[in-house]
Length: 274
Image (cartoon, rainbow, N blue to C red; front, side):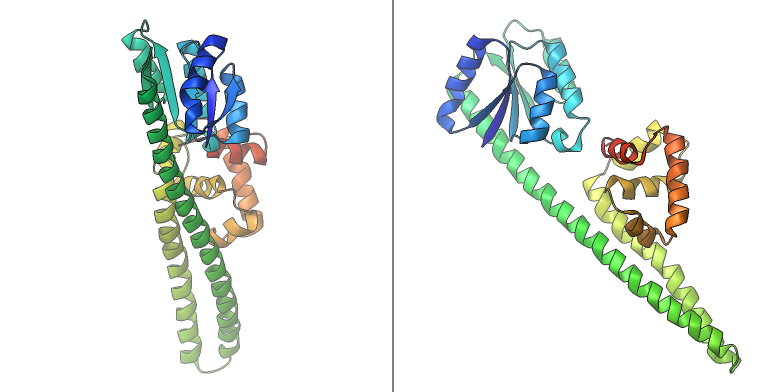
């Protein structure tokens, strides 16, 4: 198990390490929020612990930075504060995203139990999140494969309709109705299946996106959801039944609305929301 400590005072670091070392934890050390964010991205620790030698303002900045990345926003954050800290300091830290606050001086056994409890809970949450992500990936792949099959079917039906237009009218009409039915069912069912699984993993994303950018249309919010998964143009085109060219136009229009300059920044920006 790996733990990230944010602490600048040598004496505090010694106390924390001595308290947690018997638990077999491995440690990375950051002296401030900026270093903590870089290490959290690189090492993906099970828990981040901020010591009482770090100011509340630095703790809050660290939490805000960690929550800008999807990779670090799920890492639990435990705060240890001096008994001289005010209730407002604790409140602001919890409001910023800290999971819990422990007051120093602390009982070593209590700290050990708290840390192990958080790490076990975090592990369960991570496993559940990974399973849901795998499920969403599987669903997306299936939708793309089904869409490819339906596109081939539509092409064959369209060719047959063109042929039978020279033959009895009833045959051509049956094929034309079949084409209309496949087209009508395709988009509605695909998006309902995808959106159900997407919302399980990202329940706040559409609402937060709409709050930040109230001028977005439902179609643009739908496109943002797919871009957030970092899908390729071909994959998104298949799910939305749009040509790659029309999708490129839609992405350009979306970047202008969001005031995002490049494609990479667009995906990165969307992944930070929610």
